[in-house]
Image (cartoon, rainbow, N blue to C red; front, side):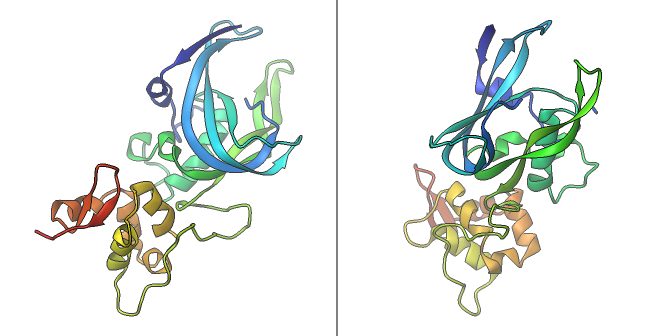
Length: 250
């Protein structure tokens, strides 16, 4: 079996969430975990005429909801062969990701306008093996229904978690006092106390009822346009550890 490890950037450059042209080997069927990295190797197995990219999704802090066998490890790796076809394990996975992270984007918009799979790195999420996906079977020379992994929930972004309801993020601030605006609340969540990193804030801000009620604000946070002007005018500052604090407005 030939195998060549590729740099993470080289793997990520070939991934997408939409515009697919038309494996998993894990006992895990439904789990939650933090996606630490996406890596991959060029592999050539069995009757493969040439090497193909196998993508590795590497997780930590695993919480298992369903597995075909006991699974006690706190880490996991899901391996999926790269493909640009919709009727493939990668196509099913990409479409499920797209529905969550690009929910505000028109379905006909090109991939270049949307977030890609690297957006999931560092985020807590749930993956679930779902049945009935029609894919080509070389042995049977026909399409057959198969199980494939889908991302069903991304904490702070969207989807349906195992509980069936959107659960509050750890460390979520208490309800905002009367009179505070959604923008003020978003800034307070970021800078109050010892301050938060961008990832920590993302896990909190989208669960806040006041912030969620302001569609324009939520969209600006998702698109990454909310914080830069606040940094530019000195409303907030970011230290060398990536933690945000209240600043002295210019």
